[in-house]
Image 1 (cartoon, rainbow, N blue to C red):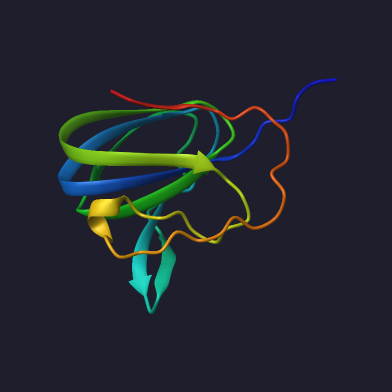
Image 2 (cartoon, rainbow, N blue to C red):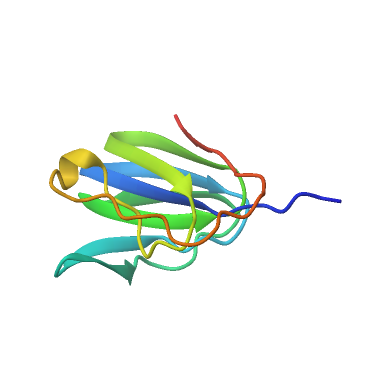
Length: 123
């Protein structure tokens, strides 16, 4: 029996205006996370990223996407931090600690299904 792929949540904290090449193997929706009350809401950030390489210029802020396949981010200019985790039933990923130092960690909701988790490489 073939093992099921699990979704990987990737949060990109852009610290300064940056140029990043995203290499993906599937259509990926990149969202910008904006503060709203006690949490965050996602706003679409352009069109879907098509399989292959896509060069994007990103302004400072938090960005988020999910993927079922291995992904590579190449920083051409600027500075980013990347955090990854298995996509469970939590609504949004926690931003990197330096962008929201007082954020409490949410509890994990639901069962974690078995499966193979893809990798995200930053070069």
